[in-house]
Image (cartoon, rainbow, N blue to C red; front, side):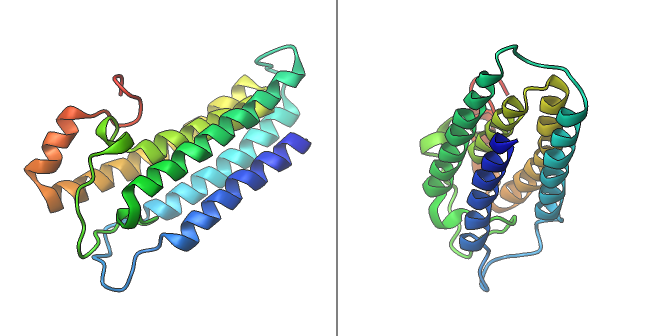
Length: 185
């Protein structure tokens, strides 16, 4: 259970920092989010809650050596690190809510050269790590599926907004990149 508390603290702390630092400003074009941020938080908190509940009440182990669940902490740390790098690469273009900045530019360098949503990929990697710490296949599925569905909705909203703002330039970026997994999806 200690692994759960450490994991939960690390993940929530990193997301709170992002939410505090990356809100849209007064001059930004708001009203594009369509509640995606709310749905993300609901899905994330539900996934964590249900994942832990399932792990404590069922037995579907992923591995026999229970010490391997600590590998999940490493996966979480990698996911959090990659997410912060993705956010840093976007710089002032990044907001936690779907927003177009007044001087918004389409960024296609760094991780964004290969993926349209690398910060979401990194978040999902963290959820995989969290599922590994629970050492339960069913928990892993729940912990990954709920946020994945919310991220899919958000990606659709974001991409419509970016097409509206950047038109053909963003459509060309879509053709050259994958959404979440390099070279696959």
